[in-house]
Image (cartoon, rainbow, N blue to C red; front, top):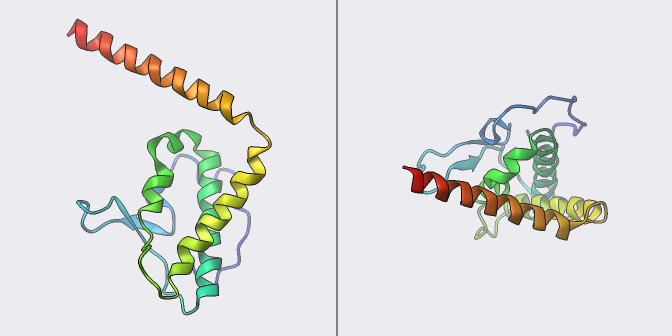
Length: 140
């Protein structure tokens, strides 16, 4: 993925695929530790790593736009778990670039939605699912 020209993905390019199928991740070798791990070419400098992290974020956001229900499956959490937060090497830029880009995109979009209304709807949906689950348990 490194040193590729960043371009907008073709519409539908990521539709219907799983997070683990994106070009910068792979299934973890030891799934007791993590679900996924990063799969990027080694970076030489912090700046290069920040750019690569931003590219990862751009692809992730494009994928999420085409698969919005995947966001409910803690996709961001699974992806965030792939970064090495303890490193002081150039690779630190991967997560700095990723979260900086995600933060900028969230900030832009935050003004376009009523976040509290979305949260209230999420809580209503979760309560309905819990109630249905309890009814199934009682019926069984």
